[in-house]
Image (cartoon, rainbow, N blue to C red; front, side):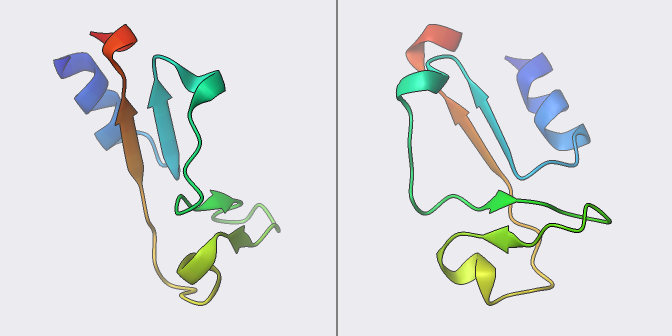
Length: 64
């Protein structure tokens, strides 16, 4: 579990899903590009807050 938290902290990504990824969906999660990717970020208020770097970590019981 500590390795998962360390990877989430160190990775510069919007989302990390550990476990049952194919069945997990949250419309509130941001998705899309970041940094110099040339792709904007989408997902509710994330589309309006250009300078926000939101992150999410999802752990399911399959990961434990």
